[in-house]
Length: 99
Image 1 (cartoon, rainbow, N blue to C red):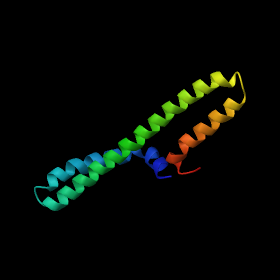
Image 2 (image 1 turned 90 degrees about the horizontal axis):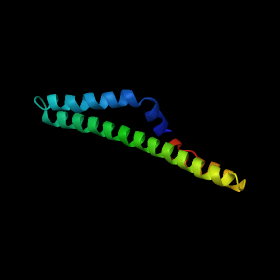
Image 3 (image 1 turned 30 degrees about the vertical axis):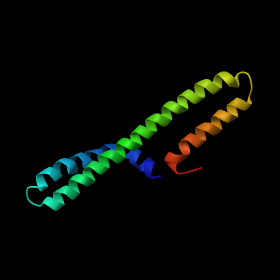
Image 4 (image 1 turned 90 degrees about the vertical axis):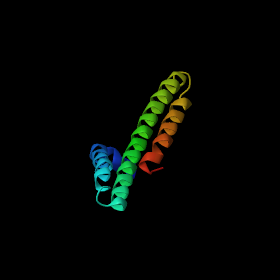
């Protein structure tokens, strides 16, 4: 659920994180503690977006490979088709929060 929201608005979150990370450097000249907090939060947003986008790309690639391999096997036996659908469903479950 949170992952889907981040994927939907990742460009805005990434932009806000970059602005906060750079803005935190300028705030350190006036308030050291506030500048460090803003900078840390900005880098945290960048890291979270990078993690979610990396996870999505990895699951998409894994899904393609699972489908390709199990389609070859499904030509021989129909049970492999159901196994591939179940594996892909379980692969996507952590990102969506559903099972």
